[in-house]
Length: 447
Image 1 (tube, helix red, strand yellow):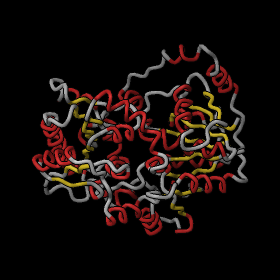
Image 2 (cartoon, one colour):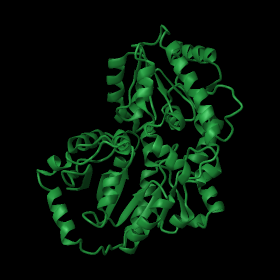
Image 3 (cartoon, rainbow, N blue to C red):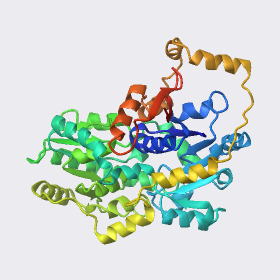
């Protein structure tokens, strides 16, 4: 039995897909540690000793950390959090550091296009890159999406007929400006000023369209769901006098998509998720001279595109009046398959198979933690630990931003979601325990 660490950065986006993968790995006999990414990383070599760490990034800042773990026997697998949605080859390669790649034992690509880019532009050969897709998109398949049905029914009951507006404007509306500035410098992001100009135009159009859409007779509510890195209060202030426009970010977006009448976005992964769920989806693309190579084109390509608020209103009204499900054209599906290997076939079993191969003969050899660290680990296991944690300084912008992306997770929530998953995979034989009182990290194993 190998120990597999699966970190989560953005709870509402990553949890379900990584929990599905955890279930399959645990059913294959492994011990899976899943939870808050910083807390998993900071405990490796102290109280956590994984045989394999599943990373969502291969940035340069991870190089020393990965090297240290590998020297102690931990294998590193890479499955990008955004490996199928990017504006250009260069923007994707900004996420893939050549030095850090040398520490990767398993490169799991979302699709053939990404695999080709990495093969052509890095030191990895095509044989070292495995096209699997991402498990989180397995949950969009017709035989698995039913796990979101109950949530969709609850949302319809609460909000009536609603339009879901997914925003993605962190370049000008980031929750923490210091993080945005750091990322621009760290990843040498191109066209930053150009992108900010474009997103300023977009966010203004989206805000104005939300007000007008909320007046449509066929809608009860417009739900604005900001990107996890955005400042939610910006939208709340904009619509504080319009009770028909609500800002919500709780729960996995798939339940919100399934419960909606129509989905609206611009270059957001939720556009792809909506199309795969056969939900009417509109890409609002106001005409400007600034958009080339700034925002990912694929989500818009699989959506119905409109360029003016008037066209948007008409198209939403058409969908509200109709009853036909949204179906991708053959051309749209063909393009999507190049970036998403699991449009039809599941990724999870492929990922598990590759991980099994890597950890088959692995053994870790971390040095025994010093006595002071052993004492800290012991304290973390005591009931007093939550009281101690309250005295820590967690009021910085970065702490608040991290809490926005990962607000916390309880054992009951993990167990409850596993019960939901029993509709689509065997989870009855799995157990969930919390690692300790301080960390949002959980162990999933076979009984």
